[in-house]
Image (tube, one colour):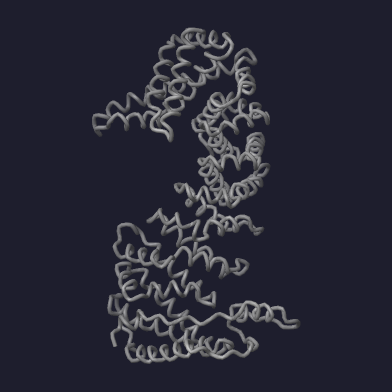
Length: 563
């Protein structure tokens, strides 16, 4: 009998007992459950009499035959030394023998776990022995070739969760290979797992694990580890998160009223990964009331800082997820209806660690023409009283992972620019009037930021002259590096300056010209920056919207010159 044929044989699994029978057992008064029973291994009362089907009888016969053949093939001697293909196949034979033996006993004695308890202990030991394979990833193709990967995936659905958890632990270690992308053996393993619908099977197993028990909580953590390992190598597998049920499970886990732990942190990280670059996941998350779930979880940090660095990391993951979701128009409406603006506004006023994330979320919610409704609502809830103090005085970096001063200023001026672009006339008037308050102090601050970032851009341009020659950079690369070097913030500041000068009271422009003259600066600098900005708006989702925005900037330039 060919060894490969033996290893690839997969008999039918036993039919699970009816759920109603199990519930009746659990609810029987006066009956105490032992630890073995809680794992599905203890004695159970006999179920209603059933007659074995022909299929089960035939399956038992086939399993017995294959088991006898495996016993004949298995070599009782164990060779020492490094693992090679020959030794691996012998190990796999022993593993498959225990799988088949366990299946046979479960089929023969479905109502008496004592009969197959020992076989499950042996199967668990066989799974543990396979951990050595994780040290030799070049042998992974052998596992795929002989069907062991399919066997492992089948064990993830084993009735005994201890077996499923042991399998999860093995797969987590096998997928945690350094330079996974460059290893052809690991590539074969990943292909085998994906062909076997690993995400869907893992999620199905997650749904039955109880995290109140440490072993099962560890199983949840290792399951998320497998998903993270696969997503690093194959980001496209995140597209299966929605259909496979992963998004729904992650939201449920975040919502669960359990103390903060490593699994909640991991769940927030996986959720952020899933929505980061997959628009379909963002849409599905919104349809699952995911925006409300995120806002509810973040509301805890409105007046209280996270108690540990791990909890702070989870909070940042939730903010990252929310920012990604707000790139979709439908989710901005959900954010507005869920009073997300009010929550972010309160976070900014409370001056806790959540202020950094709230500022980023506001920037995403208000930007672009799609943010018009949020912009008008933000002014209505007195958001101007919150954002302008942050504009006037940039706070220091809050926490190790907080925003730098430059990042903070970029978000604030981006929010103000979005308000100028999107607000209706009444709200816009309230916004413009802010620049005339207290003897035009906000105009003074605009010019202060203009000169700060102009100086940074000039320094960046000088440094790039040498790099451009050495690295042979094209115009697009140079422009991107200039944006990173302060040009983007300078464009935002000058856009605001141009708009308030062209559409606000004449006193604003007089104040701007006065300060420029005092600093021996020229208005041409602002005009050149805005012309470059207009010409580099880039491809947008609508060329019509792009042309409209370019016309608006050129119109502001004309008004600025003629007022």
